[in-house]
Image (tube, rainbow over all chains, first blue to last red; front, top):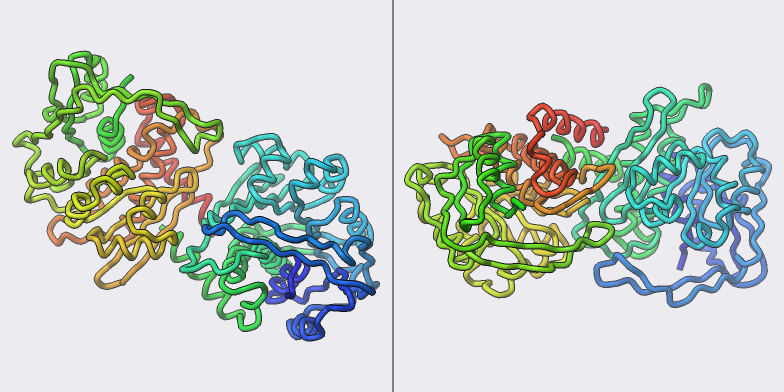
Length: 287
Length: 287
């Protein structure tokens, strides 16, 4: 079925702004999936189609949905993927780099010299296996979005405040640490305010149907909302309040993702649903 | 050293209101510990002293402080404890029952027929071993304070919203589910508002020195603050906003508890420190 980080990030961001994807699919890519993405105002000019099969992953979740076991990973056409940005992408100000080899992430960043707000995701595999490449890559990032175990592995610190302080030294002044069902923490080193943090609890779903892609949907909502209104391109300044709201919108999008199988929830979701859940976050956290 | 649920609850509550303890110690109880409790305005009339040794517990925490292994539990004088309330206690409106045998909790509750806001704690041992006794006991409670695994075990539901709905059916219309470092959730079934919930994330300490007693300090702050100002004895009505603030004060007291060994932090803590941390909670959660 339709999936992959690029798909989830772009679909999620598309509720806030036009999103442009760079990715690769095989000749088995379903035209209906392509039509769905296009219908969501996702620009597919950077979607490369090559002979062969699409990337494929399958897995089984634990009963509490907090762990998963991979059954199959077939890289297929993804194995030789070298992202090439269309000309029309190169002047865009916002860049979200999905979880691929750090060297490829850096290469994409180089193709967008004018980008003003750049960041991405990574994983344990690169943190331990290509640490130097990864450090050279995130050094240039404005933001990093990772989960708590990745933050601990990257920083060598168990305590998240200490982990965040070390990661700020590595480059990203904005760090979002995702904690699964427990929500997320935004850490920010601000030239004027110093080190600050913002914590949002996870949304309490009545049922978690499928958490696949929730972290990527978080990223799409976070960057999509900032692209919509949180970032001043003239000054390069991020409004601190909007940054917090972006974390809430990220959480909102991650929660919707879990409600149905795969990307299914995004076929019926509306911006009004999203804004209503944003208000729910306010109601269950205010005191 | 000084410890036990009763000590932590009473010490924590004493920053908000006068607290009165019912408990038992042996003849090895340190007079300096007694003087410390008295200096914190804890009424010790209900502290029974009997020949023998105090209850003793020791354990080792995991490196991440999320698990602990018990090394020694010596019940000593606690084995035959039958709580008897002094006359001066029996007309008090607030009752917080620490984690002991459900039948004993019920017996204490009977000694305070006029109590208006009653609740307590329990644990897996009673949930599985004395389930019927426990259900008969909590049926009469206004509030229940337990952790997430206990809520799941008690309700038979993994999902916390469903677990809370089942627990409301068992009696307590106010339920606080503690989640350790991830904070707490207040669930409330209100005759007018229906089912509502409030989520507070955990305070991010720079260092967790000793989490022993943190849950009990949460309980003390929660009930202590409600006794101070959140509960209208005339109408029996709880102000919903004050109930949320009580959860924050509970979280604040739990976080201070972890900063030093045992009850040490409460020797220097001030109400101003507590209110300042309450404001910190507002700052790191508002958006």
